[in-house]
Each structure stands twice: as structure tokens, then as C-alpha cells.
Length: 95
Image (cartoon, rainbow, N blue to C red):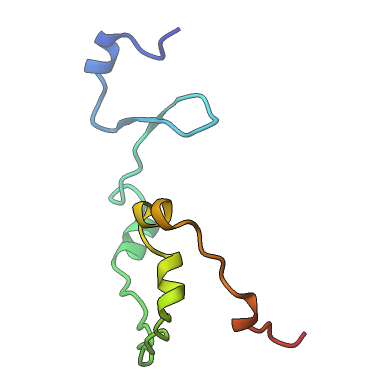
């Protein structure tokens, strides 16, 4: 069963909205304008807080050639076979 007919959809007011969200039935609602709610208008005028600057970024270490092959394109892996990464090269941190 349709939520609205084509005619009703064409006659929707500018403040009418249809809300669609996964797992819920469609909702017909009215738009909230900040002019009608002084609290929302005050919040709209607030300045955003200052954000701290991020520190310098360190580049990740380069991979050796055998590790780069394991990240190669699918055609390379199909032709040469899969490469197994050595877990000993990446020691686990102590618990």
C-alpha cells in the first residue's frame, strides 16, 4: 500500500518531509525551522570550538621486496602463487 498517492506527493507543503530509514516504515513529518525555535537559532550562531593541531606524521617503514609481492595485484599472485608472510618478522608486544 503506498504511503501517499502521486497527487498527495505533488501537493506536499514545503515544510512536509518524508523520512526513510533502514528497518523502519516511512515517516511523514514536519520540518523544524530554526526561526520557530529560539534555542535552535542561538545554537546555530555558536562558534565551533578550537581544535588542537596534529603533530608531525611519521611515514610507515618500507616493505622489503618479498612483502611487496604479497601485496601485488591479483594477476601477479595468480601467475606466481600466494606468498605467506613470516609472523616472526612482527613480534607481538608483551602482555
